[in-house]
Amino acid sequence: MEKQMLKSRLPPIPAGDIRSTRHRQIDYTPVDWKGYFDQQDEITVGNDRFHVYKSGKSGPVLLFLHGGGFSGLTWALLSTAIQQSIECRCVALDFRAHGESKCADENDLSTDTLTNDVGNVVTALFGDEAPPPVVLIGHSMGGAIGVDVAHRGIIPSLTALVVIDVVEGTACEALGSMRSFLGNRPRAFESLERAIEWSLKTGQIRNIDSAKVSVIGQLKSIDSGSDFQQSVSNQSNIIAEETEEEAAASNHEVPAQTNKYTWRLDLMKTEQFWKGWFTGLSKKFLGVPVPKMLLLAGVDRLDKDLTIGQMQGKFQMKVLPKCGHCVHEDVPDEVAEILVSFLKRHKLV
Image (cartoon, rainbow, N blue to C red; front, side, top):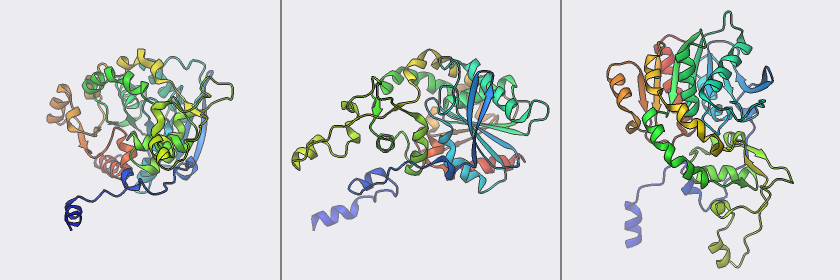
């Protein structure tokens, strides 16, 4: 009786919460990009080949710039949701050293280089004489690069700028904990399914549908002779079928696991560029002359300059507090609704 009374007082587990499926078989099978984009393309700029995902045939171009370590696939669900409401073209770029892009120098991820890459890709895609209206939408590192692109006027037909969950003050403060975060990540996975499961259980991505298409772009296959060919490290034991305690209780052995996938980009090697991505971000953002929007996972992320600018009405801001850092992946439908409303408000679609 007491158990029933206690149970009745407990709040229900939200739908889609990964904890609610703990004792159920969850399908972590990867999903192909073709379910979300019309085509993929390779843009050649000198000795560099930039990979893009595209959908839509008319209307303004929504150019999506992903965060560090991610790929253009991070925008799969959002781009689909947006195109259900408005007519537009979506282009999701893989930055150099990310996703399927292959560049001669993948060690230079400075702000200047990444900004110039965006300008070169837009020129190669649409020409530099009369490019279509472009709306830049960037997340984290991609948001910072988008601001720099807009600030420098590299895209003459830029009509709007949207930055997702990156603020100068908060980003610079977080750099101190980045090494610890990256050091605690599994170095490799035995399968794509394990990587997807890890991303969900650690909260990196909180939407299983998005994780199943997005995580693939963060990884690369390990060759048989690679140094990564080893058992899954202790730090990634959370992705095993059984924990050691569960295996002992059931008299089962935890099977030996062989790694087949590792991260496409070793983010630890990009540390020299972290500060450069975010320094001066707030002032550059406020100085961009086109309509601007800032989407945040928490209002506490605003720094002084942005707080003043927001009070002066220099940009539109929306807060989605029930999300993680990957706001656009966690709640793509909500973000799509906000973006469509923003674009219609400024008569851009």
